[in-house]
Image (cartoon, rainbow, N blue to C red; front, side, top):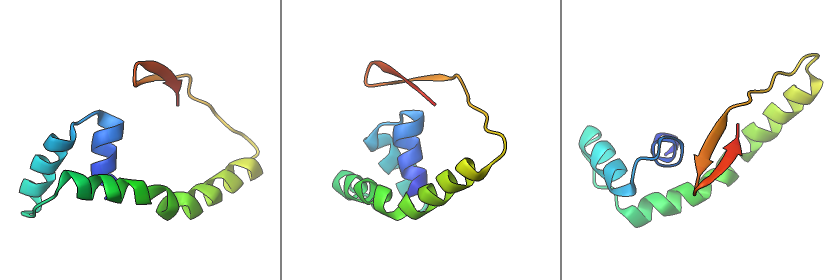
Amino acid sequence: MALSAWLHYGVGVSISQVRELLGGQFQTHLSAGGLVVTWRRLPMILEPWYVQLAEQARASAVLHAADTGWRMNGRTWWL
């Protein structure tokens, strides 16, 4: 699930290419709708991990930031 989301949202691989790549690799059928429904569930699944990570960052003595831009939907976002 996370790998397919990373390929699509992180790397920019199209849904059809994600289906082809993972379907062939794992010898299974993946529908476009199934992938999208799965991706919509990710925030709920990952939220506890995200909250824990944020708490650890707030408690850290030192924080570092990356000044790296990333284009999404034609706009620059920052990591």
